[in-house]
Picture 1: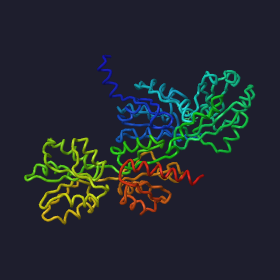
Picture 2 (picture 1 turned 90 degrees about the vertical axis):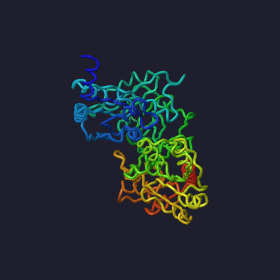
Picture 3 (picture 1 turned 120 degrees about the vertical axis):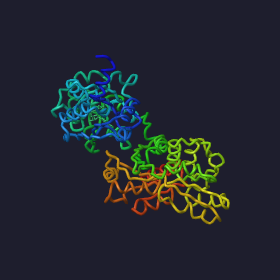
Picture 4 (picture 1 turned 30 degrees about the vertical axis):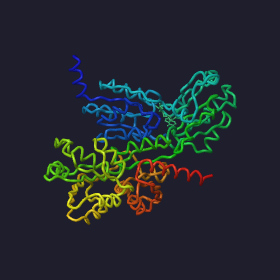
Length: 516
Ligand code: SAH
């Protein structure tokens, strides 16, 4: 077949990418995997594919959960094969997202063989395997000069659930680092097998649970007591068992040294504007999940903007109260082919630095920004700046706060035109169980940047006891909304991403202090 014809046939047939999602931390997803997720029509995932990786998926994609929990198989392997083949045959771009690396104990080979048999085109996208990453996040190198010169990956669990024949003798002799997968329930037998094979009882051993997440744990022991210690600690799947000299190394434990280590934070603001905040929190060590509770949709009235800007006489002031407003404004002008020079001579106000930097991105340096970044202070600052008889254009959310406009109305002859340029609709994350996150204390803080993000969040978990939520709020109005649902509310010193990060750090530090 000619290349083009082949490509065309492939497109019609669809294709499956078996993508490794890494062990959980979103930062350990590969660039190629992210690219494919963003362009997927269908995303087939299971429990080990980290939530973070899932948030990278095309929001328009269909998410199919084929998750298995240890011992229980909600979706049998045969059924997973059928789904992959069927979705690809419909012409879809299918991403089969798997934890770690798809070809390391992930049954990736089985799935690829089925695709090959069915004549479905596929690609394998390797991922970072838990075998190296989970120890690394605990400061354990799997190889180290004078301590371990080989690495052995072993499954402790057979396909049919029975116990595999592990070559304990050879492993004991190797002197390398041994990594056992899927071994939580078989740990006593592994321990026994290694000891019988002649491995020293004092050989360091560690159980590493939920590695690379905020909830990661390390249970350290030796071949003598590790099974007992793991039982005491009530270790849950997923966990790795490590045996070897490096397992006992403590001097490289870097993970917990960061101020927000061990904290999982949900961000509820729209995805388009949450990136900077997510990055800042991650730098401080937090696990951050971008799970928007609202979505911004341009309104029908946004189309009126271009006409308003063309009016003669023109507007004297343009007032922006959110990054979203700026974004919609920019898109509407582009759509209507309005040249930015139309705005020459128009004064521009921004509610705060976030909105200000969004304006700077389109080449506008705001003329006015209040000292305190909220609607009331913006209104008061405008009252000082706007002159009698001037015309003010306010493109913002439908039902925006009257605090901005009330002081302006006191200026004689002023003309204010509000255009509701966007609507806010509530959004639910397709793979996140908010109730479980909060009730089981998997998520530590929920971060809100507007009253609408609070309402959207509440909507996704109706009936839940919201007093369990620690709400980090950007400002007064947001805090009032959260308090209305009896959340434990903390408010940032000012409405900036930096102040929110500081608020998270203070909250974490207080909790640590309280524990001591
Ligand atoms: N393909 C995966 C392994 C899948 S087998 C990889 O390359 O990492 C599933 C087993 O992997 C689990 O039972 C557990 O032993 C291990 N595992 C996967 N993710 C883990 C994590 N975040 N923390 C600890 N163990 C993990």
